[in-house]
Length: 244
Image (cartoon, rainbow, N blue to C red; front, side, top):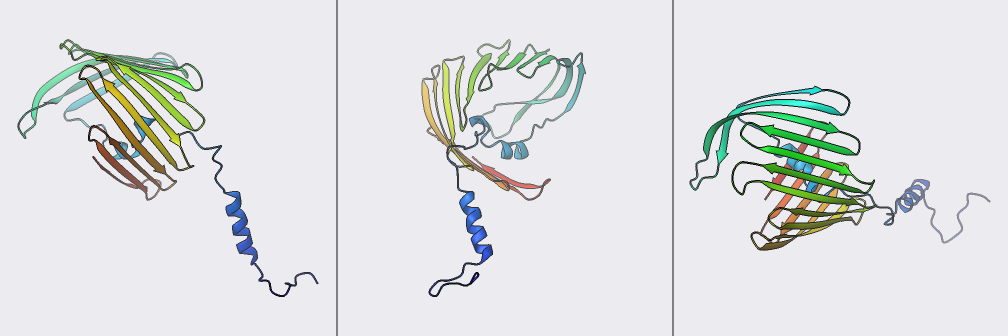
């Protein structure tokens, strides 16, 4: 008769059978892993909450859009600037400057320029050459000797990995690679060479992310160790910690 269990066997509850079937369907597909975030953003959640952009003094910003892609900006800043000191006390020098900026933002191209009254000129470029390859560059020109710098970054986005190559003034070269190994875990490594100071280094990193938490860690041969953890309590609350 239908529904009878043969002698010597144990009946499996319908709910247990359904759970086992669901777990079998959730088996990880290692050929279809997500693309990880860029290497330099491994600890972005903790840095955004614990190290927000702050300033001391007065700041006024005004932006005027000329069309859908082009806009101009004006900014006035008055406040102290910290300078390095051999003593434990921080030396602050009162400063004030005006900043004029121009912005061009397109789906595949972003150009940002800033000119300051203290003699600095800043420029940023982000250009998506293809769906997978993008180029980012930034530069700062100053009147102070040996203080101008520039950096170019090539970012390739694969199906489940990212690779980057950097080069800058002072014979600075760097490369990084980050790979998803599970749907939640990604591992990364980097190498760099600073020709001006004749120094090189290696670095390793890991990031574990779920819907409720993000944990990341970085170590480098230079002695740098950085660990961060973010726990999402609700949609508007989270607990963050970072140590270096």
